[in-house]
Image (cartoon, rainbow, N blue to C red):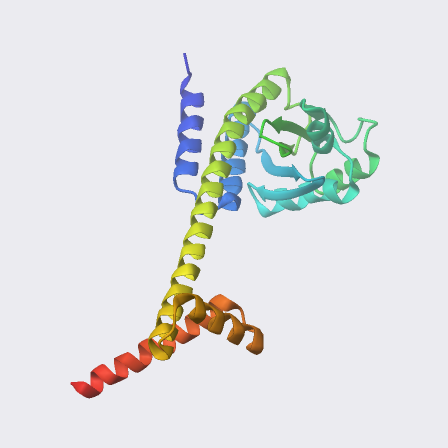
Length: 245
């Protein structure tokens, strides 16, 4: 049975994907929900950022606050730390206390200077060659207990599913936009050829050759030339219609 906190988190993620403007907005909202969930679970103000890895490139692309993004990018600049290790190994990685943990000395110093005492990276399951990790930051040590890690993993599992859905939707939208652009381009070229056919009393193939030759001569893209020709023709027709009135 799903508890109320999980149901609320799931509802928030569904609303986030349903109302998304782009992937960046989803990631910012996702980290805000993650920070709120972990804050509620630990009783300590938690900040969160999300790091994406694709095609051998790792980048921080969203956060619950600008400060969270800045802190997370320190690790990307250094090239080593708990979130990068979590990405590589696919398991949660905890930096329990920046004052005593022997790992990542440069990163620990940077966190301490920023007022962060502990951090944790929890990977999300994506698809293909992409990876993502939620990076949590707390001002006091000892908050990411076994229960805290379990809460982070629970949220990351739901968030990964929501992110995969958001990526699919964004990809479908992009394909639709590309198809529409291609259709618009084809329509403009067909209309331009029709104008040339009418003016030169020629076939469609000959009209296309005339248009392509003009494109090469003017060093102008074929679709741009076609759109310009259609626009000029439409403007002249509008002017004639106005004069006839």
